[in-house]
Length: 359
Image (tube, rainbow, N blue to C red; front, side, top):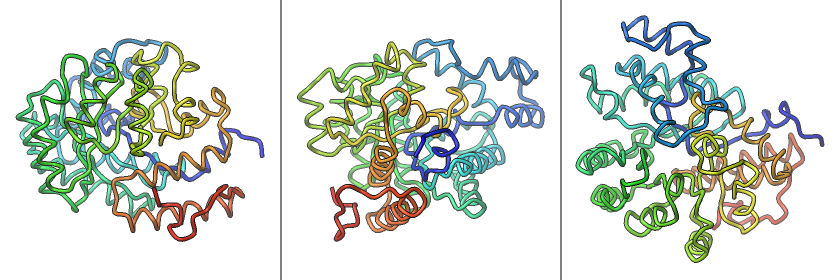
């Protein structure tokens, strides 16, 4: 079977690392800015598109993050957040994403008086309406921010606890990585872990494996966002593999932030060959001008991933989702059946007793 964009677009998909404020439509930004009298660098669509999308304008992680000042400026009302969440579900449904975890930080949406609770409720409503319309299941990951105070992270962790089992499925630490160590935020993760909530942390993207070490051993992360530089510490890499800790790989984004000098040198294929649990994600669909289909095409062209490899990555992502075991099990069964009936993709080894969910 020849792999092409149309075929890869049809494959069922799972995304675990997608930022709401990095995945808006340009037309929506313009519309929200006009309705809410928000200033933008330009109201010409083509020019704004070029400003927001990295393209070949690679820079540091900090320069990458500067573009969020534009998207965040129009996401300061409940209606705007609800619309953004709904449209994201509509967009991912077009490429057959079956489950997505959407992350954002409520404290970045309070400039016009919206409370963190208001923002959570708005995103929940948008995602739920999206699920009803497009049959895409989703969950919210609340983000603490490395370069904002640990006290704020603790408040966000408390918010996460209060919305546990109400649309929120996990807690994250995002933002500028260098000079803002995860261990400074360990009180927030102590609260998260002691309330039996899942945790993921951006680490090993702009800083080395010491950042991943802190995420795992100071903060108890269950997944690692990016993990690009994990290979620099063989012992830590073996620990991640032995404990089946998933990596949320974001290829295009990693290239844009200079986490890798070239995509052909990205360690995803190496990690995959080692047996590490790798998942494929967009990070920021607008800023990096990507989709999961585009990311699938990249790994096919660059690393020779086959349909069976894509099956493995998708099932691995669903295994790694911050959902209850029984919900994961049912979704894996549905995805596996679709892969078999539509694409003839059978697993090489089937554990019938656990339906592929066992570690």
